[in-house]
Image (tube, rainbow, N blue to C red; front, side):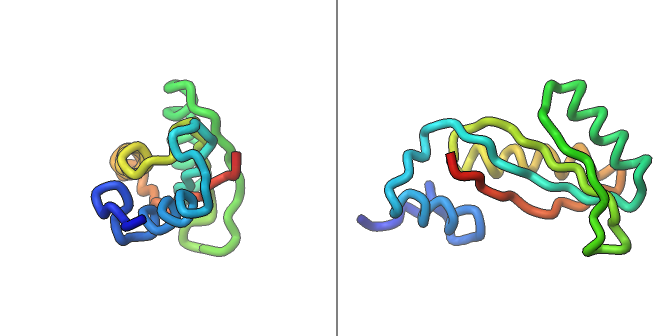
Length: 113
């Protein structure tokens, strides 16, 4: 099967989705996907967490010791199909909404269903 670059672009997300699809995973099945955003202060992280909670998002909040400039992490856990457009769209939404709070997007992590 040849890779459709519209569905599986050659970037980090597209590569992971392509590997999942090649392994036989059903990408249309909704699953929890983790999106992490780092913040320079606890106060800013909590403000972002409140914004997510007001929009009915499941999240976690914890210290992030690996980056002293951004020592607080909020991770959102939306349920969605594993497709590039949903994942990329949610990432862009988090980046846009965390920017006024000095948030730094840290990555997407796929949880096996």
